[in-house]
Length: 194
Ligand code: IMP
Image 1 (spheres, rainbow, N blue to C red):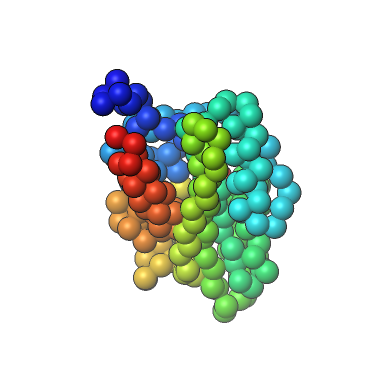
Image 2 (cartoon, rainbow, N blue to C red):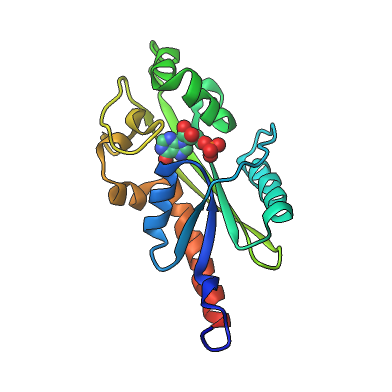
């Protein structure tokens, strides 16, 4: 206890099995104790990441209580009408980066963006959403072995996310923006209580 408040309030459970996501988020929330909470939750078929995230966090609150958050993200490719979008994880595990490059093989319009939605549930069951987006292009080949998932085919400012360090990616990525918004919320709210 500190000033009558449990200091474990600074401890948050991040519901994910993705180590790449976990390290990025942990590095941005260095003032907090972040635990990787590897439990499953239903990902509903919906066209918006927000809907998927809201459904998931309500389920997690019912099962495991509050003080936890999840992050849903996806790659949206303009020429493919937003595919893979909410199906990004599935697409990554099936067709992979090579499959995406193949789908765009003769295509000049290579615009794409990554989007991230964080859903947080506090210990009282109150839910908040935070979001971030980064616009870029799909490269013509895989470049770099940093990061995870679609990083080697996502071009931003002349380099793929697969070519840049975690710290550099966190400064410009969808997840970096979403986590910073989340952090501002946590900093303000915890400051009020402590
Ligand atoms: P989900 O959020 O767990 O549903 O998975 C989203 C999927 O989108 C991941 O498995 C990755 O394939 C992809 N993805 C999301 N964010 C990133 C990123 O920052 N880099 C590369 N791929 C990403």
